[in-house]
Amino acid sequence: MRFDTIIIGAGAAGLFCAAEAGKRGRKVLVVEHNAQVGRKILISGGGRCNFTNVHTKPENFISKNPHFCKSALARYTAQDFVELVKKHNIQFYEKKLGQLFCRESARQIVAMLETECARAKIVVRTNCSVKTVKKTDGGFEIETNQGIFSCENLVIATGGLSFPKIGATDFGFRIARQFGLKIVAPRPALVPLVFAENEKNFARLAGISVDAVVSTGKQSFRENILFTHRGLSGPAILQISNYWQAEKPISIDLLPQTNAREILESNQTAKQNLDNFLGRYLPNRFAELYAAEITENKSLTQIGAKERARIAANLNEWRVKFGETEGYHKAEVTAGGVATEELSSQTMEAKRVAGLYFIGEIADVTGWLGGYNFQWAWSSGFAAGQTV
Image (cartoon, rainbow, N blue to C red; front, side, top):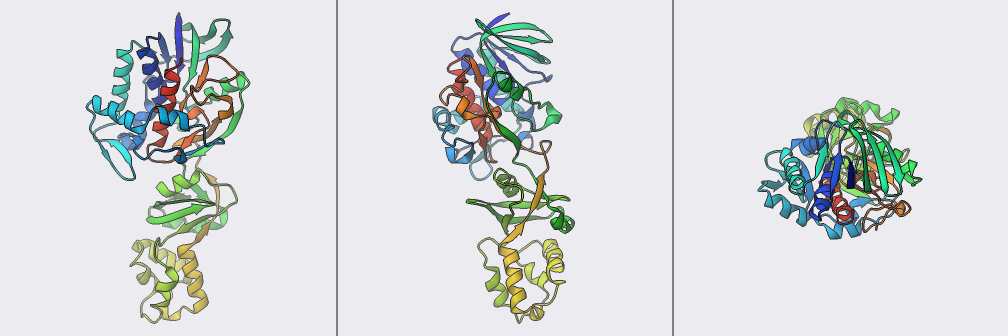
């Protein structure tokens, strides 16, 4: 069967690209190896799908070329997607920091994309696994378990390596390598971090959440951190994980906007133990375990000047070493991917392989936590959809 465009991957980017191409009268086939479309959409945002962020700007994305995402983001904005959501009468709300969620269910976003594809007469085949991809004189030929299909344009929208339990594979990277395209080494992103060996005594704090400022280099995020049995998670840690480099400690301010040295100095004669004192500013269980770990929970009158300085430094600038991440099975997304130098920022087409496109997470563009990666899926899908 012959199509104008075949899209491999029926996730956010793939379905959106298909609908846009179909609106232009293109004959489009979408193939998906899972039994249902949009599986990652369905589990995102706790089942409510953080579908975009109203504050989206290029600075919210990481790439070897930080300018690459500008064109696509400008051509299809967060507000454009919000208007589409409104058109489908999907109720939504802003949780915080510009993050927009469905009020009811992520299924509404999938249903919206399916409706848009149906209106554009898109053919969608699920349980369809691609065996081989070949370049032909007329474009491409793909062999699947449901037959052989040919097309003028081929779009790879297979996502990254995150969440293998819902079908993530390295298929997109294999296709890129097959056609000789450079790949920025993939790595887990927006992912919990695992303590280095010498930090593991903090594992007993598992389950405790603390408002903190987490920093590395020039990047800083203020949100909660969550202690796990192996390390740290929570929004601030997921954000900083995109910038974390092995062997380089992360700085954590456990008392944002509070000078720990000043409050300790001004209360040095108080007749209370450190845990009770810190309980004014931090969760009680954390204060108790932290005080026991750092001073054997002395009273404030027993803590000398040098020790106060050390405690204060640990509170305002706790430098933590991590040995590894929790890996792709807990990573929200995959950083790295097809090198942007290989792609047109206007259309997402491979510069050296006419008719081959890479959109969404498979490209070396990774957003912050909070709806930015979905916006990249919509924007990059739109860019390709206007061309294929």
